[in-house]
Image 1 (cartoon, helix red, strand yellow):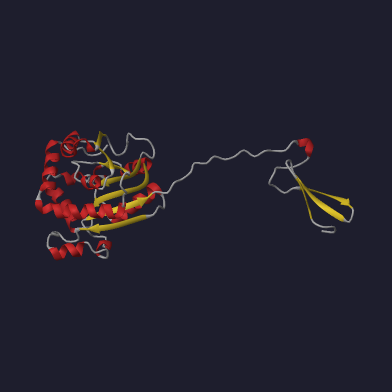
Image 2 (image 1 turned 90 degrees about the vertical axis):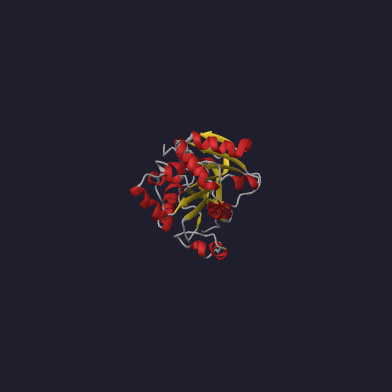
Length: 280
């Protein structure tokens, strides 16, 4: 079921997003998501653990049809106040999504997989309802900021002491366990604690720097591959009196003369094929 944010925690998160010093961080994170996901206008996307709706706004600006789901009614209230009727909102849990198979082009987690009880079940559900891609935005457990948040949880009560942090390698392993060997791409941003200076911003946007696995915020995308469900076909057995064998196995051979040629005839239940010149 996962951790459900209460009223105070939802308000605190909404306040954090609105702070000016955090806007550049949020912009970096959103750009990373859009760069990996590459959605197209008019496509549908499900935000699993939509929270206050902050990660949904850039998707609306691109013209996507966005749906959000979250277990916290307080988060959903804030999200509705922010987004109005531009997004369909549902209350529910990541491990049991109330949608049919292939309902959306894409699904994504944005710092929400950390708070579910069973990440594998949540990823399974995200893959089930998506047709094209699944994106996961996460706090890197091996980043300096990730270590700081984990240490804070040892000495004081924060929402992050309820979270499970992932590294790039751990999350990649979970994706493989869930969906098999699909194409996976990842990047990280916020390599430095305060990316507000102009020079640092250019540094953070470098594709080479984003390949570093120790940035505070990581993004990983799975490209889903369609799989067809198949069923075995029944094998037709020949009638006993015809003295033939199963079609597709070694055939019964008979030899007979006809003029200047000797024919080896391959006889099965369904056909008679003659091959070979005389003497062969």
